[in-house]
Length: 437
Image (cartoon, rainbow, N blue to C red; front, side, top):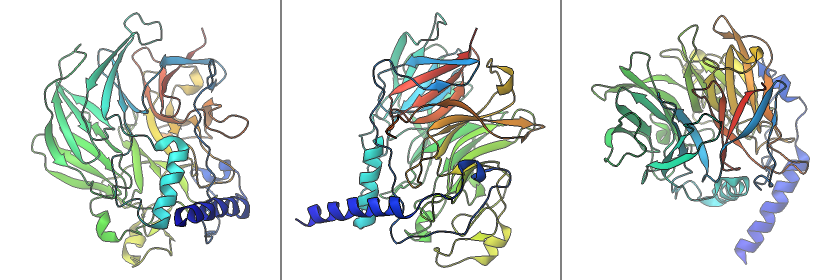
């Protein structure tokens, strides 16, 4: 009886929240180097506006930008989230979902969020594997599919240095021996370092990229809460990018105050590390814009105490004015609640000229905004190593006319043929975007 009443209350609360609070700005207002930041609009019950996950109807696909076309590179996958292209052209896809987090769903708020994520397509068990896709005949469809690594713990990021393949599990960084051309690795991985995990592990996705010379690894670790509500002690080492010495395993915090950094990539002109970051929720449909930014060594980006520089978040206790004074604003906003996860630069792309210099971003889509935002892949043009101009839609149409999610884009990568691959963890596909010939 209690659960029934609670469910009814939650349904009513969600309806009231969605009706009582909605955006007063356009997504474009929260985009660019100087986004509009209205006053916070914290309501008793946060806006819950879920796009229920339904998958793609037979024959349906996203809409590609003019001059490009889209087709399935691989289908029938199990929650594909992240992609990595090996030097021989093989594509690794992390089929993964959240690990068990017994303390992250405690209390009414936790239970509500568990149901929200389930309805959005994130409630399935994790396959815990990495699959290899091979398109040997270069026809744009992977004809070979093998289980490359299995029995992992919610894997996400992958990077290869020499013959060492690094995989970021939800609680540790692993190293596996790799031989070019092999379609499976049977050897057990070696733990390089432990990563923050535990029974909450709120933002569980960990990514890893290597420095250009291969001597250092950079690992992204998301926060353990929205704005520190689980206590600041639970945030130790989190909301940060770690720098790991590949030879010794020694690590340090390279940059902090990044609520949930996911995509990381090296900007080809400047050589700087960039990341895509999910900002905080529950202070209105127009706050806070997600962003992409260059990552400065030793920099603090505000979380949880402030956002976009010195905009203080009064929900956090205790406050830390000294850290707020050091907080720097990110380089470029990509819209509020867009859940921007994937990030890759256009280096090697053979898409039309307008997509030749800049960053592709996979936007997983909102739950805390009315109307929805994200649910697409965008391109941010760059000039001289910095964003220049407004984003361009690359792949849209992930929501149907009833605002249900047929797919949700996550990881993005340029393949060996110069096409853009997009992991779709609700559609269970990898899409390939190519130039119209």
